[in-house]
Length: 460
Ligand code: 4AD
Ligand code: MG
Image (cartoon, rainbow, N blue to C red; front, side):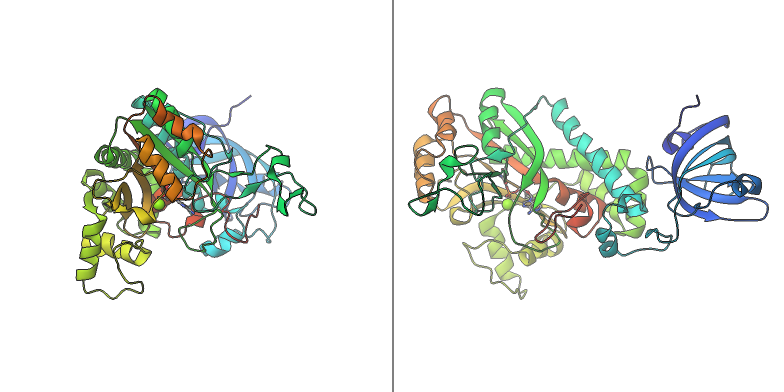
């Protein structure tokens, strides 16, 4: 039996082929008296294959050939006389696997991303989302390639957990208790009677467990789903996203920034080398100048500036902000944008934040006011990486946990790695969707994840 060839392989052929089988979905049909032209796409690459079909073959097809229909065809691959394409398929056999009618929502005209989001089950068949999800797949591979080539051990950290790593109270609860009548103790829900004998939720970060592995394997990374029940409806937040979290023993904040920078450079280089066709599309239709931006990013050194300097720069800029810039408050997205777009025109690491706005595990600096934290900010998207050197001194960490209201004994296992064989270590988390936004130019995070989960939406 003749084997189906992906269109990506067919279009890369160096010579004509007498007998080729291809299957895919119709992007457009142009009917003519002499011949008809069908653009067929199978998702293996951006381009469609042009099928040239004679009327007698179409006449015997059942009804249902139109945009969106599924075809299996056999034919001869010949050099195309048409401009803009090297090959076309002169069809000798055609089978309609799945027909359509005019109600198929993805007709040829351009649709808004908002509309396409409402048909997230069909949008992978559009040009834009084909490009987005092929790139997502390629870059996901590039993540593993980067770390595996550098001897980082991949750890699958748990999805169900008892700890709220970031301490922001944004965990989704996981329970099998009856919501109508949960068991009570002293008027409160008695979580000891729940499935795991404790109150559990979906992880907001694999970091704490990652640290355990870093103090055994030295260099590790996680790449998994994370969940945040944060009620923010912005173009940069989703409730379920994928995070890459490397963790290194014997590493400080500067080394952590070096790793982040090198890793991002690898991702950019991988995209330029392996996703050229999809990037061309984004460059033309989504963000003009994207490829140039990525090429210069690939060579650029990222700026590093302390939070304290940043606050000073923003205050002196003369720019009117909605939120006042004050030492001790978090940077708002308008501040982040101003920094990356106006002051630095590129990515910038902001380091050494006030300890009052950062998580309990970050290492205290000697000034007594700041912690060894870093955020990587990029134009348009804002924060794509958050990381830090971790507090490895047992007594300091215990004090910090108390100050953050973490009950004694709650994270004893986390303290144990400071009790026995403690070492300086650092790591960061890169939001995979935010990276994709940056590399594709897509403006809404809902459009770089297959099935976005946001407040009020867990469709499909
Ligand atoms: O800055 P965050 O909260 O850091 C951590 O979770 C650390 N435990 C990471 C570590 O040090 N191992 O999150 C890290 C990154 C952010 O910079 C952002 O890119 C992404 O995760 N992120 C989100 N992406 C999409 N939607 C959300 N709601 C996100 N929240 C964070
Ligand atoms: Mg952060």
